Image 1 (cartoon, rainbow, N blue to C red):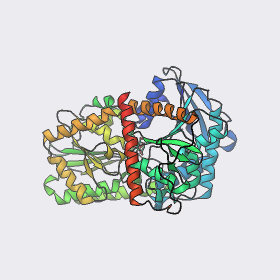
Image 2: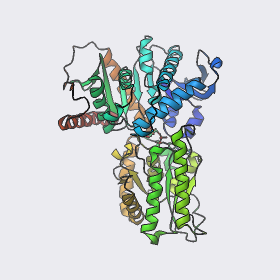
Image 3: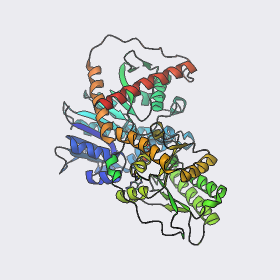
Image 4: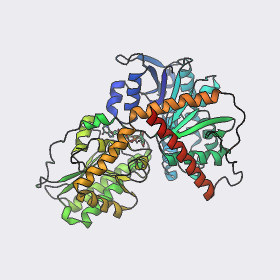
Length: 505
Ligand code: GDG
């Protein structure tokens, strides 16, 4: 395999990326271990006249033959492509929040223009043996634009956020254009089995896509693979955690910390978490003064309206709960509205008896995996995790809760606090097996290996394949039960294939 070209909306200095957390760490690791290029936006917004034709190319010292190639955005592009279509249409719809979506024609036009400009600038850097790996919802049309300019290299796409149910996806006015753009990839990687099933159903409902005999999906005249590659973490990095000094506010040295770490985003279920903690203090008064909730919530996308609302809601809720239950020497909720350094975060996870992760919808939720990996194996804490996080499909030994059910979450806090050590160790051991078995390196290796084979399949000239099932022409908006169950069976098969692939590496 030649070089890897990673394309993502935001490109960072590799050292900063390693500190940033999330998937930036995985990309930085990948480019340190194999030759490649990281292409995308440099985070700068400039005037129309200051837009360069070509990307700014920097070779990365200490990263061998890898480099960064970046471009700025204009103010208009930042508004329409980034804040607009990406974060006010695709993000809310993919997180099941149609009520927050702003369908404005200018947004889509801006989204396409930036993808065209990026494709044009990237074209100049592509060599014949390169494999191109595009990340996330900002760049769905990139492969189609590259193909239009004659690029035949393997191109894979990974979606970090969830795929909504087909009915929700169909509400996007440009859903057919998005389906056509997605079909230009050789491989689409998703976080969960449910995401795979949803995307296949969406292809079927929107553009009469069909599952072929060889497991690929036929859309228009394209054949693509859609599989599950759950994102992992670098577990060894978190195992180094050490406990921080005990809480310095309560008279009681034995006070337990419940920790939450989430970007300040409406998808993360933060008001529900605060309400559940308030209900817990109300329902189980014996625990007052013995527990605090430390919520770290660095702000993001502050110029998008929906994000100012969530901040105000949380400030009001934490103020109310602290006012209602707090004492002069005990503040129940610590709400920290800024970012915390990564090594400090690790130590805070370690010294927290409970990790509380309650997203209403989340592609994966890496924080829950980081929390588990930071625990003391001889006295581990307990993760409480929303069933609507992609991570719940893997971390079945966490206490799984419904984030819409405040009562259930309040009870889960009590169960976690009272869980005996042998059970905590047993759960932790099983959780760590999963986390270690699917870490960042396995994730990128298995995706790239599959991209290679998917591109070979595409290049092979084959006789037309008969669909495993024919598209349902008129029943486009409703999957029959038998169709849904067949879909689930199919996505199970796909994910087993992905798992066995990762094990065999
Ligand atoms: C998207 C999908 C999917 C958070 N606060 C601080 C901080 N972080 C780091 C965490 C973690 C990362 O940011 C957040 O990752 P998540 O997975 O929890 O969530 P998203 O940012 O929404 O990520 C998500 C992910 O992509 C990967 O595919 O799992 O579903 O939404 O690593 O540690 N890091 C530092 N200070 C903070 O205050 N240093």
